[in-house]
Image (cartoon, rainbow, N blue to C red; front, side, top):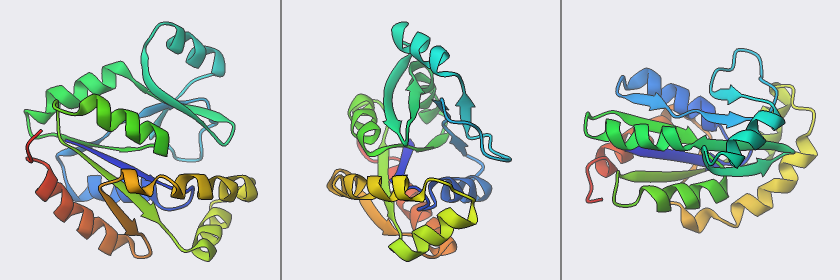
Length: 184
């Protein structure tokens, strides 16, 4: 199973995924490659240069990608194959993903493994507080994308208002149990 988590910058995507992995030994993080500079203590991504990213695109090694906040993010084809192979072993993956990538990813895995797509929302004032707390310098840029992203919530299985991490994670745990073995 693949759990796709999307939402505005600062909505808690990676915090939620980390908490899910701490609670569930059978959930792994599906890493994206990105041209973004690493944040402190971050190991959720495969950080590569723009040139390396372009080379992977040219060689058809990247299944889907999206430019977000002037950086590129993409999913490797080899990662998708790993998700499908591990489903039979009861291993699930979680991935933060942009709203356009979610559409492509869900479509590509249809019939191969269950996919649960979740969009996280947060009140705007809380979102700003979180972005400031992590030292974000481009808050306006991130907020400007928020309206675009909110236009895609109907593509997701579930929309969750993420104001309490423990409640959000508990809800997602229940959803995983429900969706993990549904008909693919």
